[in-house]
Image (cartoon, rainbow, N blue to C red; front, side):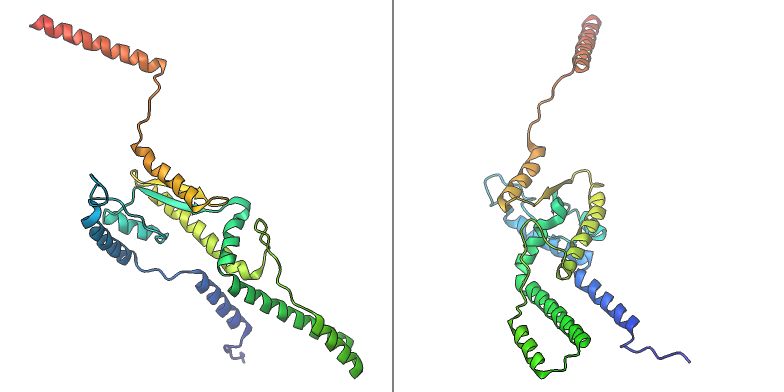
Length: 259
């Protein structure tokens, strides 16, 4: 008969492991409706004080939402409530395979990641030692004690990471998956955002940038629609203008004749 499948079955274990991996990557996100309602209330509250920001300040605007969920449904919920922002800024790191964000994330979670690295290196060292012992089958106690003494001298060292070259280590896999997921979601949502003609989208590279420089770039983008842009007249434009003036002149003559 068929063997009973238990929780210890390798395939079950593999499925559980994959489920845990997926869960660790995906964030818990509230429904689009809840997000939109909370934001609507917050903006309504803000609008009460908005005019006091500076003389002549408009009632609307003056708000920034950070880390809004990247989903088409969440964007649509804002659109339905008339809460679309003027500008959407996406901070990206595509240079050198995103090494900048990997390094920053490592530094932010250094203790946790380092302990995982050490555990893996220790496990690997123990496994290697067991394999060697199994091969050699030491008989002499003297040899064993000598080996033990040598082992005590062995130190497991953490690898050093250069800022511009982040090695491919298993401990960073979850972070890499999160970044890939973000980029995938951003592409989907970006095309949806671009359906709204009044919303401008700007993607800024964070590598070698300070928060101040990124802020300045964002402000420039936000102010651009309000700046006066000169228009260079081409030969066609001048001809067209001359024709319009001539036509206006003829119209005036006709009116005078009628009078």
